[in-house]
Amino acid sequence: MRGRLFLGLLFTSLTVGNTAVLWAAHGDTTKVAADEPSIVWQASPEDAWRLMRDENRPLLLFITTDGCGYCTQMKKKTYRDAKLASEVARSFVALRIHAERDVDEAWLERFEVQVYPTTLIFTPDRVLADRFNGFVAAEQLHTRLTELVVERAKIREVAQREEPAPK
Image (tube, helix red, strand yellow):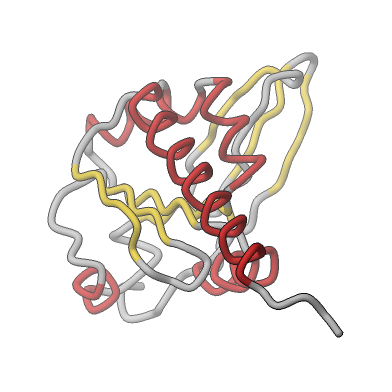
């Protein structure tokens, strides 16, 4: 239903042989080898924002839709890349949104989504740090995510040096 902020997505994990299968309520399935790093996508925008705030980690938001060839390519190639998945798991909160089922038009307009896929990266204080419109290769996305992690570390280091010592 388009009028809802989101349709609750329930993720269930089932291991079959050496393959872990992740199901989403909207029917999207992803198979990855059980020993490969995989991205844990949050079930709702609210869960993602809360986790981002509580853990002080940036948010990787992937907005997809049905019938989008580039969206499918990103799901099959970009987000299955072991190096990228490892970085996302270590440093980011990940949220995948289906534009036609999970959010309404106002939500998409708020983030100025005009093409699919759209990938947005937010700082923990909800500031948009970067945007990718269209397909993004794993190496390109990994490079940018790594840059953001390094930038955040430098900012924290400077802030800690500037804090007055406790008396």
